[in-house]
Length: 105
Image 1 (cartoon, rainbow, N blue to C red):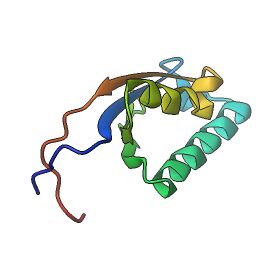
Image 2: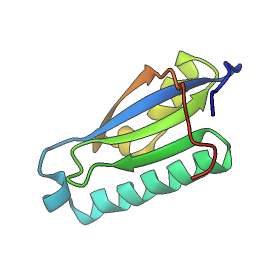
Image 3: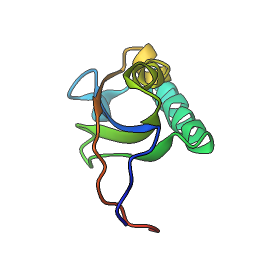
Image 4: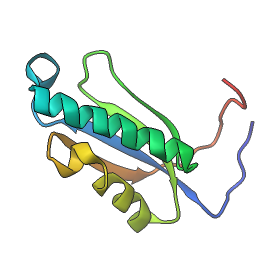
């Protein structure tokens, strides 16, 4: 499916854990925040803002593709993520020019 430009833009969020060993040595408190991060992403799906999210097997990087009104809105979505707020994940946002997407997975 070829996508036409709409009012909302697509953005790529890149997540990185606060330390390289996070997957192997995260605390119970950090794991609780990761659970809140997952719930937050689920809420973005419900709101129609999240297209996809996931991480690499080694948890070195995670990504999310979101829809937002503008750069500030995308940054606000990232800043509201509990894992970013707590500092256990670092994040960055880039405008993403989504050109092709399979209609149904």
